[in-house]
Image 1 (cartoon, rainbow over the protein chains, first blue to last red):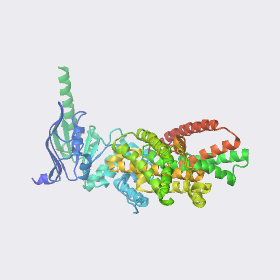
Image 2: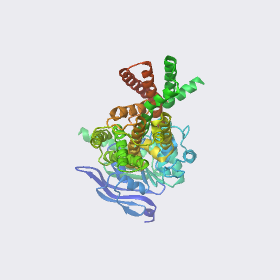
Image 3: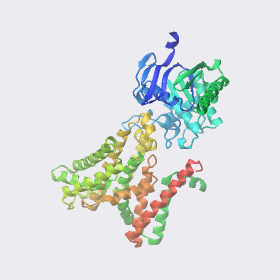
Length: 258
Length: 319
C-alpha cells in the first residue's frame, strides 16, 4: 500500500456511458506525485473522455476517483481546479488581445489596492519574465500581445500559467499537435523542467507517442476503453509500443476484411 | 523618423484619428478663416461634448462584447427625473444625483436581463430603448420643460461650451484609466476577447458586464443633463436614436470593434470631436445636413475597412 500513498490520483474501475455508447469500459490507472504519465491511444480509444472525467467536465458512470488519498466526486471543472487539477487546451484559455503578463496573471492580478484595483503592472511584468525564463519558455518579450506569438509559445504560456496557479495535476491534451519540431521541442523542454522539479504531476495525452516518449516516466496505452499497457519508459521502447499498435491495426484490418 | 511616426499612427488608432482631425481643422480654417476662433470652437464642442460622454460609456460596453442601444433614451429620461425631483422640493444637487440613479437603474436592468436572462444585449436594449422612450413621453406629457438653476451653475454643468468639453475630457481620461490600469478594465477586455477563457480563469463575467451597463447608462443620463443645461430646455424628444448612433459611430471611428476585446475611450473622444469638426465645418461652409450624413456614412465605411485590414496586417506581424 505504500505505493498507493505516493499516488496523487487513482481511478478504480471507472466506466463512462453515453446512452448505448461506452467509450470507457473499465479503467484502472494511477499517477504518482511529480510523475509524468503519457496516455497513448488511437483516435476513438477514449482518451478525450478519460481526460474530461479527470478534469471534472464529465462525471464517471461507474467506479471511483481517489485524489490525494481521498475519494472525490468532481462535479465541475471549477471544482476540479480548486483541487489543483487543471487542463490545458491549446490556445483556448488565453486572451489574444492581452499581453503575455496580463494573461499569466489573469484573475490573480497583483494590485496597488484601492476599490478600483489599480494593476501592479511592474510586478506582473517582472514576475512573468522571471517565471517564464525559469521554465524555459522563449518569447521575445512579456509585453507582446498573445496574438503575435506562435502556437508553441502560446501553449507554453498556458502551461506556465497553470503551473503558476498552483496546479498539482496538469492535463495536457495533445500538447505538441499541429506544431513544428522546434515548437514542439520547446513544450517538451518545459515539461522536462517541470519533471525535474517534481512538484506537479502531469498527464500527457497524445497519439504521436514517439514525440513525447522521452519526457514521460511511464506510459499507458488506452485501447477500446481499457488500459492495456502500463510500463515505465525505462522498461519499454518506442519500438515495443509500435509493435503493439501495429498489431492492433492489423487485427482491426483483418476484422474489416473478413 | 517619419516612418516611425507612421508606424505609431498605424498601430495606435487614436493617433490616426487625431491626425485626421488636425487635417480637417487646417482645411476648414483655410476655407472659412473663422474656424479656429473662440466662438466657433465653442460651437464645435456643443456638437461633440455630449456625444463624447455617451461614447465613453458605450466603449466600455462594446469592449466587453455587448451593445447598448438605449443610451439615447436614457439621455432624454434622466434630466426629467432631475426636473421632477426638483419640482417635488429636492435641492438641485440631490435632484441631479437622483436623475443619475434613475439612469443607473436602467443600466442595471439592461445588465441583469442580458446576463441572467441571457438575452442578446442588442435585443435587451432595443426593448428598453422603446420602453424608456415611452416612459419619458408619459411622465413629461410630451412637453419640454426648463431646468431651474442659477446661471453660474448651469454654466458649470455644460452651459459654457468649455465646461462642456471639459467634462467630456475629464470623463474620458478617468474611464481610459479604468480601462487600461485597473482590474475592471483588464477583465472587460478579457471578456470581450475570449469569453470562455475568461470564464474558465474565474473572472466574474456577469458582474463586470452589469457594471459596464450601469456605467454606460449613468453617463448617458449625465450627458443628457449637460445638454439640458446647455440648451436651457429639457425635451422629451431630445437625443434619441440619432445621438445614440453618433456615439456608436464615434466609438467605431475611434477604433472600437463591435466584436469586443478592442477599443479605447480616448479614441472615441477623438472620434466624437472629429464628427463635431465635420458637422461644424460643413455648417460654416454651407454644406447641408444631408451631405453631412452621406459623409458620416462614408467615413464609417472607410475607417472600418482600413481598421479590419490593418488588423490582418498586425496579425501577420508586419506593422
